Length: 198
Image 1 (cartoon, rainbow, N blue to C red):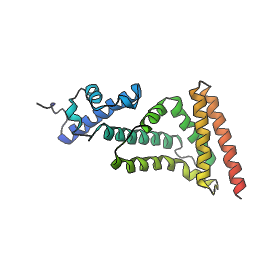
Image 2: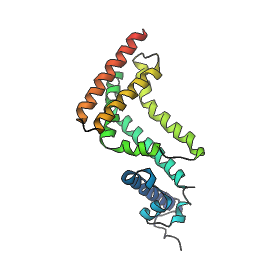
Image 3: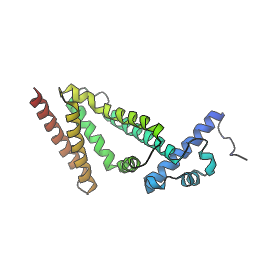
Image 4: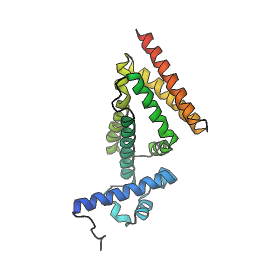
């Protein structure tokens, strides 16, 4: 006998069960890394039978692909929320850097690192690539607005600055100071790149 339907409709019940499985997988990934996200472990954590997972996901790799998509959407939401109604592109970039590094401070980036090392089904790779593209779109418009001709160059230098600051934050340096240093360094560098391109 299957689990009793608690929601008003079968569709709502399915949605609730899928959410339950995703929450269980997320909890396992945060606590133990991506290797801990197995069909058996997720089923146990969610309080469901192992076979019931296959009603929602083809495999643990498919479930992990959903986790990656969900985490990118969450991160995208945080970034966009931080820059809502910001008109000045330099202020936008400054706030974007702060939010990106706050994600490191909060420890959620460890989940992303873990998820990035996971193998995902080939049929999900285009979805994940699209999610990553949407994340990058949160910063491309202000980089264009400041007059940067070579967008790839600006993105590379900006990403390298964030990577360096992330390592320093993870090493125990004062997070707020590292965020400030990254902001000042990145803005000065971007302004210099714009000047050089004129």
